[in-house]
Length: 561
Image (cartoon, rainbow, N blue to C red; front, side):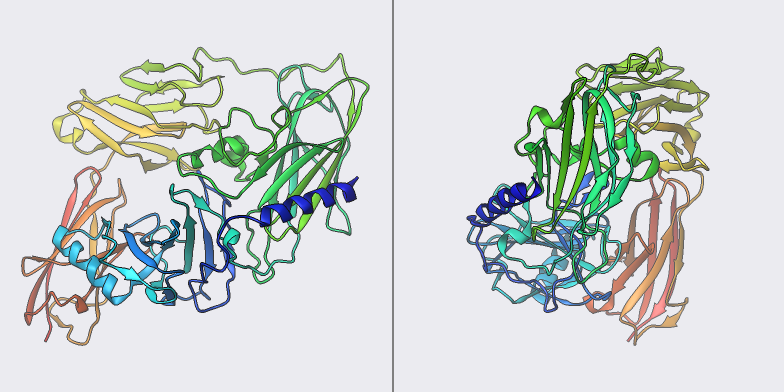
């Protein structure tokens, strides 16, 4: 059976390889061998990874080259996310993206800084005209870094189609050495309604896996009845790295017939949020394990290909079936899991007891929950499924279920703070309590008169929190009245223990200066090579404001020739 299936799949992959994606058009953007720390469409928190994370040998400052001829069509500099990012549009309609950069090439850097000083803002988003910043294939465009939300030095590289949909760069001939089979970490079986059971249970079951010498796996046999589905936790590793990466394709078969396929080839940013419906969100939220469902239930992801009954398996009494899972990476290395299913009806088996509360969420309707001056508004189509929700208010603390239900979009939480003094109102914000210590994490909060409004996609516990502490500001590499003639950089550390830093502004002798903020190190950095500072005696002034408006001012003198 496996031999026949393998021949069919290899042929399918061969046909897929004869694609219209240009081969040998895009070059490696670095001068070092390609070794990955992250693959395309890898499962990440609340999104699919949209490119390749290329290792930079634990260094920053490597030369980043244009992957093909084109022009710089977009530049975005932000504190978070991609950090410093460059977008190059090519004559064939595709766009390449280079992110988490340290800095840009001299001409692009000058273009960016001109606009930063004009707007007096480190964060900018620019859309140069085609004739402003043309680039040639293999020419320098930037230097690799660790900016934004990067967890370590690397280059994030993407290829997008004309509709701005990210695509797997390996489709274009970007080659990664990989002869290693994917690894199956765990498998779960799910009864999908109250009349379905697995091993006489109406709850999901983790199945024992037995690895085989050839790299495949056998799962424990199960007895089942009704509609059931499976989910798998799997990773892939390339030959030159030990990172746990994502796979390229997953298919399932029931008695030799394919009944489900998910292909990680291309997706749109609009749909990436549906990753939380693809995984077992409850298991991820409570155990930090990403388990991919192998059945399509209320999920519009375009990654799904051919499915039979949406991947759901209907098991009848006194039947026998063989269920197989095939997991493959882009190089077609594969691992198989086999599950034997025996249809057995147990009349003594009982459905899982549902937890019933006074509050019920219908996914296709808007719902308002209100108590003691606190209101929660769920809009139509916020959740994927109907469920009973736990809603309780005690003093200024809101219990809003556990964070075990995935949301498609934001809902709003409002607090009436009219009982507080005007002075206190200005210092209040809505926080989500996280961790076993219930640390108050700032949730973006707006105020309209005596109403605070927070917007979020996470259920959980929320509380009204007061921030009276001002941000802290301290010099890192200099002292007051010091001569800094030989220094290239001016560094200052800023922090806020309450609601967090909202914005900052730095001037020297009353003139705005560009300071790059790295939230990971909480450091502001000014490059004296900007040429802004021309006086010998310099009065530095830094103002930092937190999310409720508390602000601190730091002033000092330094000298420079």
